[in-house]
Picture 1 (tube, chains in turn purple, red):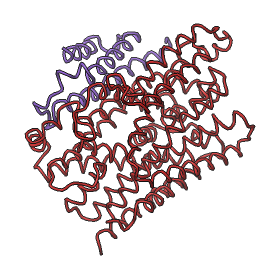
Picture 2 (tube, one colour; picture 1 turned 90 degrees about the vertical axis):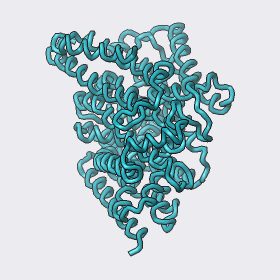
Picture 3 (cartoon, chains in turn green, brown; picture 1 turned 60 degrees about the vertical axis):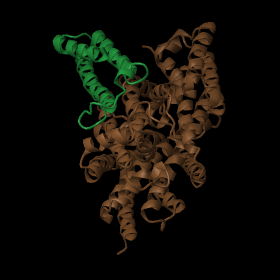
Picture 4 (cartoon, one colour; picture 1 turned 180 degrees about the vertical axis):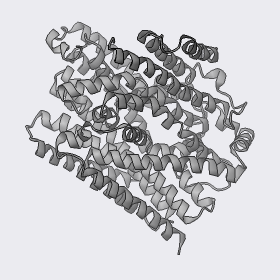
Length: 93
Length: 485
């Protein structure tokens, strides 16, 4: 379920494109990602993924799961920054 | 030549290089308080990135990280989990704090808080809270440096001497050059640490097990308890989800409240640099993966280090690497210790003088700088005294330091984002939260659901801040305009 939501957010970012996105939406999506990440890497959201198998790139599943959310946050913050920067340049924040 | 002598030469060379970089950097800094505390607000992206990364990754991550993976298994994943979460809000908070800093001339976070909530006692309270959290943290870094040097020189350079030499160097460059030296040495040490961690983290599993996957397959068969979240306690019993989850929360909340990290908002050249640092920060976080691999590689290894924290130097020595490589690895671990230790020493002096002493004494710029240097020496001396004491409860003190430092989050956030907050509210919240955290630190058996005392503190702190603020008169509109224009 959490995996699904994760993809939905990234999917929405791709579909909307960062050019057309408003500052409000971008901030809301970033905060949603961070909230979802918090749940997914702690109890209880982590429970379904707190497993060893299958190994991902040789790493235990739970470790790769947490690392994946961390790596994902770079992408989300980068996309947020693109929107924020455009708004700063237009000077309408 | 004997191995330990060769190793010592490599380490000595490394320390000399660090000293040179630190002293050279100082020549670029102005001789003022803004120069010492905030490097004249001049750090670009490269320096900021490594300053932040290298100050977060301390001896605790470099020695404690593998130690946790080795002895407590999956419990160590918490270190990987909290960093990105703790840093992300700084994308907005950092530039906001920076712009308030430029407008009102703040160089510490207590100045930011007391700029909004004017009170000398609040300022001293924040200085005191920071200092109480700092000392065990610096002690840990010094001990880390001493442990590494003692282990790899076969005891020829004992802990007290190793720690003294490494931190003598740190103190020399912090004293002479302040923030500018911390910035440039951390850039050098940061690069060094990343390279060392990945090299060793991949080398050991391949050398001992033929790869990362075969290593985990074997651990999964022979020690599945170790890889099952939330991992084990220090004594080898299963850990609780309450403790795991609340440690992530309190570390994420506390991370950017460490004065040496928060103050980066005031050292950055511009807001763009700050934001980029936040975006790139999680990449630094991923460097914990090889750190964990180092620890896991020791799990099924025949020998045993004297204590889990020794696992990194132990594995380096036991796998028969050439002396020069051993020396370089130790230099990497020393980097981790020194790059956090210098930032901590520097920040503690800035905080004590700016937020404590100058509230009661009127000192000119020169006198302040001199006093800061004195505090660096005193704090260093106290931490060194504790570092020589082989009392292992220091690690527990560090966890508690996070509980205390996280109590700075509500007043900092309220100062920048909540108009209705009042001075009385901020003080009441901080006192109540810190007292609660301290109470549960002393009485761990009373902790609800095994939650971290810092989280329990916040559960009292935030409602107190809100309730008292709402019951006290709203701040003057003119005063608020300085913060919310």
